[in-house]
Amino acid sequence: MVAGQVIAVTVGAGTAVLMAPVALGMIGFTAGGIAAGSIAASLMSTAAVANGGGVAAGGLVACLQSAAAAGLSGTATVALGSLGAATGEGVRWLYSKIWK
Image (cartoon, rainbow, N blue to C red; front, side):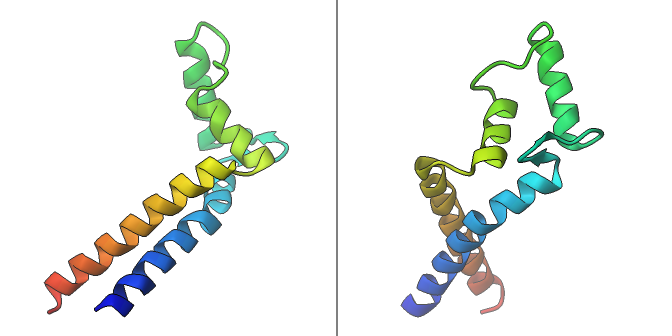
C-alpha cells in the first residue's frame, strides 16, 4: 500500500508543477502578456472594472500573469506541488474505496 501512496503523491505533485505553465497559457496568460479574447482577458477586464479602471498589483490577475511571464517562484512551486501531492493521494484513496 505504501508503494501506491508514493506513486500517487509523486505523480500528483509532478503533474501539478509541470502542467501549471501549460494551463496558464491555455487560459491566455502568456510570456508576452494577456492574450486578446481569452479567459485571462475577461479576468483582467473584470478586475479592472472592480478596481476603478486598473488591475491591482498583487491581485489574482497580476500574480497569474507574473507566473506566466517569469515562471513560478520557489514558494509557489512548493505550494502547487503540495496541493498536487494531496490531490494525487486523495484520488488514490477514493479509487481504493470505490474499486476495492
